[in-house]
View 1 (spheres, rainbow, N blue to C red):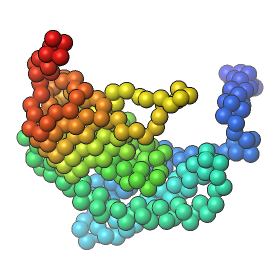
View 2: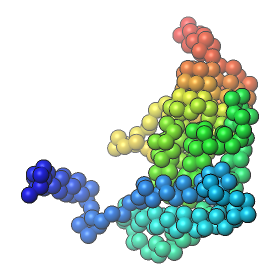
View 3: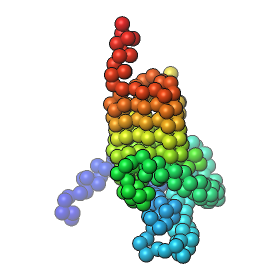
View 4: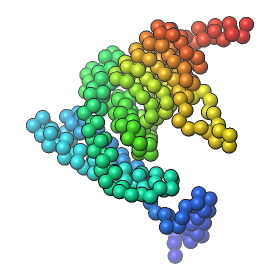
Length: 304
């Protein structure tokens, strides 16, 4: 007999599961684990990060002579782990769409091969992000400090990997990678967001970047910045319409200071500066300097 008298609890949980599965019209034969495993995905992301930056994020005993061997071995393990998770997502997506799950292994292998081929380009992008953080923060003493210590860089590494998965039509895996970064850093970047080179998030906690946001090159954000949606259109049945462009476009060389909230499909023109705690729901031209005082003045003029 269980110390905690769990028979009734187990029965109650079984009833709750069956009610849910019945409401979702899930056949009994499909009541098996078919979703990617967060722990396995986290393990793969950590391994990929160390393969991208072996002498900084790899094992302490690694030297330059052993770099290629370490990278090859680590990638092989990480990509095999990822392949299994890709296959689970493909199977899950096929069931949701009512399709037959054919050739899952071959499809997963092809997708992971494409993902791997994009890693050199991801490393090149990340180098620009690391340099942007180093050059943009007077407290940074080296690029190594930036890579090892800055939560913004951790979040961007995850985002570059997640965005690649998203572009390969693996939205669930991409979202898991993004949420791993969110949990670790407090920075929430949807994997669908398109972000150019030289991106720097300083401090970072509370930053939110939505799915359809487009960010240019050499953009800098500070903590608690939100690039969000202003409204959520619904269809005739009252269901939210998915995938519509609803987040801001931030052009090159923009700086957005702490606590600023920018909502809707608006454009922040190249070279603009958005001050702290600004609430912005309209586009601004290139070279703008927007402060709380200027937004209040605009509101007063509109009201008049």
